[in-house]
Image (tube, rainbow, N blue to C red; front, side):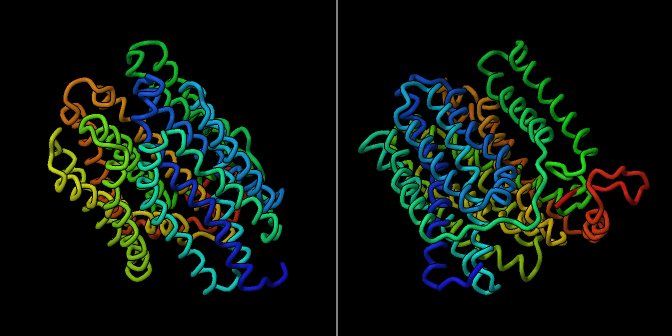
Length: 486
């Protein structure tokens, strides 16, 4: 790749950040719009859960595949295709005549979304070759996450109140159009010199496992836990997971190299990502319903209540990164656990008529804890991995984040279904979910402690030689019984 001018690099970075902006905003905007969507379609709790979960499930399933396709077919090409599909999905969402069509359109939107952020990051790493330039670019990338969290709920609330919930999808269209044009003009095409082998069987088995588990959790309350629908779904999930484990141990180039998980820090990063994002997904979903349905607030008032989360994340995310760089992952993980635990206790104390100041403190504590968890997750996932495996390790961590959101939203109906459905007092029926959130927050701290012991660090060092071997090689000796592929 020829050396690009500084101005062109800035335009490329801005173009890539556009994709991050729309994908990141989409989560908070759609959550704020859920009560309006329910009224528009007379949707039940499970329908609302699927509006969120179909998106995160497809993202979790396709993130790694999209990255591999971009390496093979060209990053610019796949990025443009992703923007086009995301725009098409957004348009279909905005004109959906029923909640079923809306869920289908969200499926389309997620296919495009899976081609955006991981591919955009690959473009950035190819364009910004100098380490200092790259660090600044990645810092800007991270700042966009905070900006999107700050403006997403406010913009979404304003649009819902003034134009209607369909407009929250319209906002994606001009951004996608601008990004497609700028990509065509300024982004150079690039491919990987080392192509990742695709693993359709492993990917399909993993998708079946995730879809079956989430489907069972969402449909169980609607159909009854002892009926054929959830029982069949959970059975399919178990079979899918078993096939996934069996196949990935034997294929030469697996979808997820299971040897990665012999590194305790890597396995811990995956578990912490699921815990943190399950809590966050449940929090966003439930509190949007609480504020608009239970408290009777407008969408923009509900959106403004999320500002403490955005401020906390914007301030503490870079601070957490600096702490990780200087002291390792333990301080950030313990702080994250403590703050999210405080937030979960605040949620347990919330009543149907709690004062606004109590909600603001709870939201800030929860957002601060969540803001501190991302840097140690990424560092634990990729730290100590061979350079050619760092991308795969980071992709597994990203998949775990999306899987966590899916589980968190699914748990809302499974554990607090009467609160979501609006039967009786919200606070009382939501309390079991907040106990689960409290357990997950404490779990982040306990896992963080275990993952930073000397023993854990030795497990990470011990798998280095395994990752130099073909992934499908039979694992015979105790020392070779490998694990994780980062």
